[in-house]
Image (cartoon, rainbow, N blue to C red; front, top):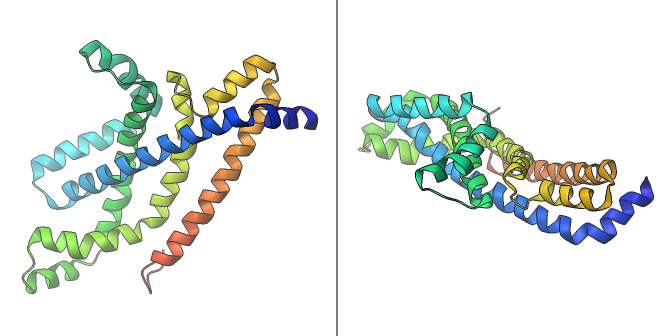
Length: 222
């Protein structure tokens, strides 16, 4: 089996690397969408008007309560029925990003809830508005507190991006399928893919731990 693995890596390595590149593109952009959306939703549910809180709550429950694959199929297959079309990569980014926003919002909202209200009152006492207290006092601390879960989310998205395979986005899993159908070495090809996912998950975990250590609030124990 070792010889077959080496054959796949040597002959089809460039093709798999192209798929890996697309996987990283989907992961990074989806994560950014999720991070920005997560902060916005968390702020809405913590600080803004009750009506907006209800809308944000419905959003979170909808995306957390339905499978990500169903959400991807809705974006890729259902939206064209309404005249809205996206290519496979963009559809994957949108679906994964919107899903991630729901989860990241909960991480950040939980961190916001851990900020002592005395700090918010102190911000009011020096003349900051409600928005200013949130922006300059609560949010920076909350993001740093939530770093462990936020970095874990990035690792999860790297693996979850494989669902883009189902809409023919040319990411790592899809390229692996092409190689497998050409060589009929299904076990060997998917073994190579598993090794790639494990290696890069370990690398991302190391980067996550480094970020956590650098940005951890002094004296705060997770």
